Image (cartoon, rainbow, N blue to C red; front, side, top):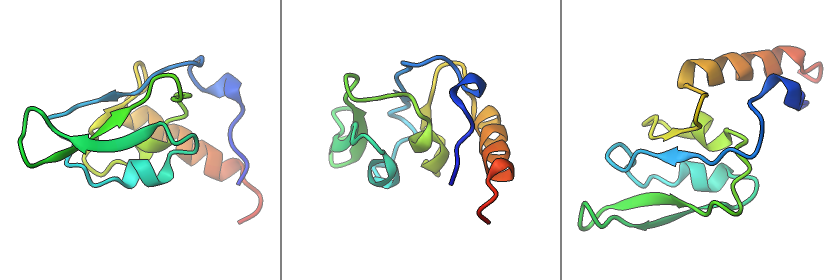
Length: 98
């Protein structure tokens, strides 16, 4: 799939924010992160529960994790879920391989 060029996305580097109250540790984001910047850890606030943790030095702010998260627990500063859906729709519409 071709991706929309960087001019259509917020300037990098942007580090994701994880809402630890919403994250349920499902690991879908971990599986899709292209730079392996995410891992699942034990939650200190919720004993017995898991949450995602981001390694800032690895995160490129691509938004794949945000697009994947079913709980909308991951956000990029300045890029809300509706904005991300718009970018994804644009990327899909530009892809000629379908």
